[in-house]
Structure formats: structure tokens, C-alpha cells
Image (cartoon, rainbow, N blue to C red; front, side, top):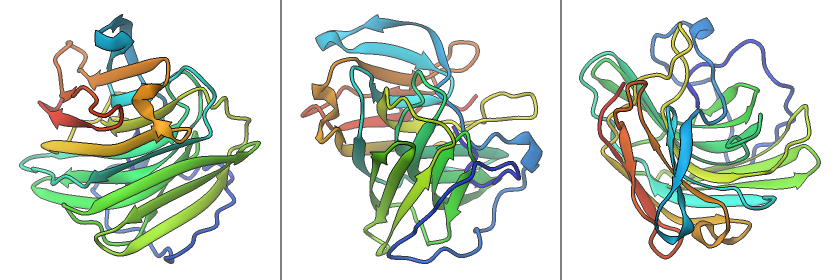
Length: 264
């Protein structure tokens, strides 16, 4: 949903409180024209969902993969993952890993996560938060392949959320309180691997070869994400219907993996 490494000039007003680590200037970013990038966005679903085993619905998307639960009103979402290594050989590619509320069928997304972008043969890692449709904001702390992350997004009240991310391996964490300019619907909670948006023509950006990312302890409203109603299993496909990554079935209702197949 994001090109995390670019912050657009037109930003949503945010009230931010960051704890446990100080923000500094953004890290060096791939060479992409800022005006060509939309640093956030909702799920771009393709066609109708189909029911698979256990009442789960499978969805094809051009930018999201993972799981979204849509059968209630959501106050929190949480998961842990190990930052995958990016295999970079040519051009620019982008892959984001995050937890969030909203965005599946609504116009806002409140989220935080990590990313690996390829600038040619060079992989760049960083962490961020975003209150879409506002811009993403990067944390300046070191992120490396193999780092263990845990993240939680919590609704506080009204249009206010708390976004927590902890890089346990590097020993830093942030808690950021931020507000939207509109009232969120809180109609979905999700744990997502994403091909960020956008190219000059408005298309989804190429997906970094991230190998496999494993998510554990995925919860919504404090219970296993797979125990709720309205569960959507999502995978990424390109405009020709070719699968770009796969989403595994859930184990213990809260653990799954995404595996890269191809970029677009």
C-alpha cells in the first residue's frame, strides 16, 4: 500500500507522541520521483471472493496478501514476524509487512510495519507507520534482515489510534499516537504483506523477492485472528491474473506465512 520511503508534501494532520526511541532524519531512500508515489492506500481487490475450507473466503488482490477479518468492529490488531531478506538483482522493487485496522472495505488505514526495498542490487530496510490517506512516516532506527518484530495498532477513541512497533533484535521500539481527520469505520483488522503503490501510471509497484515471511501470534480484538467471523485469505496477483505470492492456511488460528512467487 505504500512506498514507505517517500513522504508526500500533502500530509494529513497528525498528533504524534513517540516513546522509547527518538526519531531522526529519514534514511537514504531509493531514487523514485516523489510525485509518482502514493504512500498509502486501501486494498485493491480483484473479482469476487470464493469460499474455501472452514468458511474462510479467498480473495485476489493487486497489492495485499495475508489475512483480514471483517465480521465486527475492531479496536486492536497485533502480530509478530521476522524481517525477511530481500533478493535484489535489478531495478526497483518494494515489499511491506504490517498490521493495521481498516482499509479492506473502508477509505482509511491505520498501520505500522517494516519494509524491504530494492534499489538495483541493494536492499534497504526500514520501519514506518501510516494514517492513510496521510503519508507514511519512517522511523530512523536500524532494521536488518532477520530482525524479530512485534507490532500492535490500538484504537483509543474517536479518530485517535496508538501504533506500537518493537524491533526486539535491534533493541528499539516506538509508540506513536496519531489522529485521522475523519472518523474511522474500524470495519476490518488485518496482517498484511503488501506490494506498495504506485507507478507514474498509477499501477502497483514491483514486489521485492522476500522469500517467505512468517507471521505468528496474529490477533484481532485480543483473540486469534482466525477465530473471528468474516475471515478473508488474500493473495497478490498481477493484471494478467498471475500469482505474485501465496498465503498459507492458518495454524492455531493465528500463524501463517506469505511466500514470494514473482514480481509484476
